[in-house]
Figure 1 (cartoon, rainbow, N blue to C red):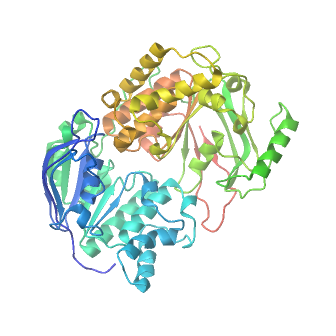
Figure 2 (cartoon, one colour; figure 1 turned 30 degrees about the vertical axis):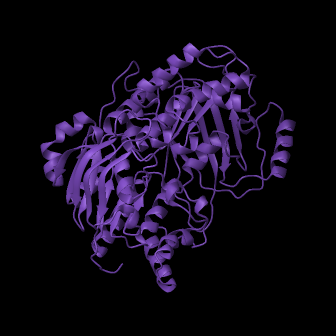
Figure 3 (cartoon, one colour; figure 1 turned 60 degrees about the horizontal axis):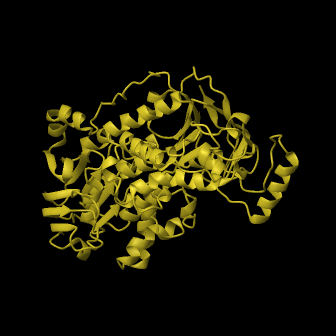
Length: 550
């Protein structure tokens, strides 16, 4: 990228923002100046207003009621809405940055809208994809076929291709594997050095960013600034204060509160009954056609109560996966971006259909009727998980997607937490005790620090709050298996430790937990077993075995 120093100046004067329906503003009277070309790391606890601030600077917050905003924000003297193209923002949810069907067109979208000459656009596309490590993909590769981490890289490439005056990045490396974290960070730093762009980054991975930044700003409660200075100064002088507040600092791993199970949760001593078995399982991102589904159902019917393969002619992403999941056991699914971790998890949950091999629920899981007794999940479930009814799925397997927004369909946090139990009661035609539901909802909200947000719209929450809400929603129906895709995304040190402790309690209660994660500290804290999926070749899908480790 050519060296064209053109960093943007960002100024906030007494800026405030109040989400409709919230009792208190998320940001209040904020005054801040970021100089052209400055590299700033923005820290703070979950819910402190970091993402809201980035959205405001990027011009994507809208004061629909005329009362939400106060004060002013300018980028090079212009209001954010008038400075489009000057600032490029990457949001927490990588899906929200993808607008086109193919990799090449998605990266070209920004320059096209900025009226960059056609011949220059594709030069920029190639440079940007190379910078983020996606240049091995053809330009016509479907963007929908990318993994979460690859989508994160693609979103960053789209920003780099615009050569913005300011790069505003909300957790740009959160969903990346360890090698990808450094690669993407270095590409961001290289781009800012080459262009002189101003850089504003929100990240919980403080140690990988702090040495390269000019300044650290810490947001406290209400979006006010509690610390602002050189990285070494802030992280040294305010270290204990930041730890007490729940802010991540280098060389510090929070110790989750200990409960009755101590350090053995999910470990090798787990002796619970088997719940789910995969034998020579193949996985794919492709969906079977209606004709293939009908043929598979006929095969399953002929098999009766004997689990056996029911192959479908679909492209295989990976094959030969063998694992057994037991009650009270934690299983970490590890591996680089694009290796098929989320695809495996979706297959284990019955949300994707395996093209070959066997995925079978054991009698223990098939007969499960809930932790509280009664006809919790209706009739006995079939061994073939994809054939389960919604009621059988709700009561047996809870799933938390990588993008929390995919799960939200109600207008308030309370309604979202109540949705699963209400739906389950309707499907099984069981009466619902409103007092019990209120008590259970309040308990989950308290455990996951959501009590003050029960009346808030789920889509106005911070990334970390959305993640905790999605976990609480999955737990509301007391499933026997809980599957979490990147569970620690967006969490501050305090909520990270509380989440670990909550999962330990679930394990002690006999719930099996599967976590797709790159968080090594999280995996170590929960002990358990792991299955590592190796990287796939770039050219075509393979059938490389997953390796299961005690």
